[in-house]
Image (cartoon, rainbow, N blue to C red; front, side, top):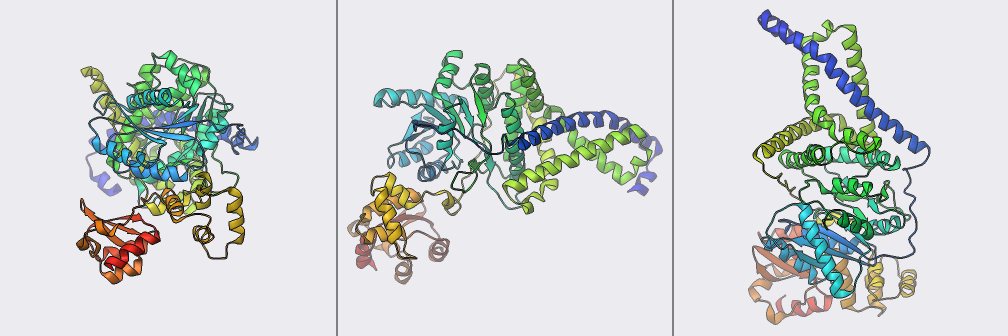
Length: 594
């Protein structure tokens, strides 16, 4: 490359090199200031760790279990919302909560998906907005809140805490307990959010893993512990009811600002300015061990989807936040405004700095750098190495060291992605303002984990049977002690006559997120029942009972396994949808058809 450059016309090469060299000093100063800013947060975080603050989630113990409403705004989420609700109902260890899912009149598929779950569970409710969508997430949340008020009037229920979630969230089984406990002291509680781990090749999603691991184990802890405002993450956010009423009173009954693209961020600031106490809950584990008490979810895995989401973040937090909020507030508020908005400069300049660095390596231009730019460049390089090291440490803590080794590559990719999102946001914001148009809500497409990936968070079957009143806790403990090794608790309880088949399969349906059906031979077409070879159906103890919409519905008394799905797919090209049925119902139908 050097020989090629030497062959180029000197009149072109020298001015270009001169411009590169002149740009080094201002670029180095900008990144030195930003790097020292990040280093200050690192030292504050280390200081908190030394003093044991923010490391262990020492929460108060609430005397009562308050009634909690979970708000889930939706737009075209019919492919994921039924599984999300069913899984979280089975996973959450909290006695008194309801889920209110908001949908629009012109989104019947999402309405039908919510209603299919609401028909099975009395604590699931569909809240339909009064106008067609999409509008904004904030507008949908406001109408869900109005529906909650109507439900309270009709039933006499009172929700003391409200929590927000999205259609792709895996709610930790102990999250609501932690929110309830912290609500003894705080008006606003933010549970950490982490990305579900994906393979190393999923580099776009890996960027989310890295960034949330760092921000929610470091930045947000420092922000919270030093008394600065805590922005909501949009999911895993708990509000005491009286705090929301303060918000409503201050903004003409608008809990969430409809025009805000990042209403969660703005709500954190609004509550802070109203004097409401806030906390970002440190990442911690429940007393019995297990996974971190965090909200986990899949983030976009393609460049285009990630670009759309990050464009909304930049437009909402940096640009619209600057426009709507300005720089008013305490010294701490202004400092975090700076940190939230410095990416408007830092992200695009980061790509330019990386390009200059690579150009310098290829052309040996660094041999012409004078001492001052050279010292500045080495200082910024050192800070960048520290930055990568901190991110690797945070990522390794949440995931593992092997995954953390990919941070140096992903950080370069993240720089390009964030720069593209920043430029895109600036252009869209400027065009909207010049045309006098409102900013558009750029919705993120959501995905949900497979059933197999969700099993780790399911509640124990015995716990579900006790909470549903099918068996007493004393009887369960006695049954666990008398159970023979290798015998499943459900089978043991059934054999002991402590529960019925219907009790067991109702609990299994709740735990596994599978529907229980009654197989009535007279209602099953013979051609459908024999859609699988008889020997295959007998081996796997399944029976097809319905074919509709390109899917074959199969029922059996045993839980489906990957091996079962693999074996059955060899005999049908239709989508397999599995349901549970009791052994008695299965045997009765099998005698007729198999």
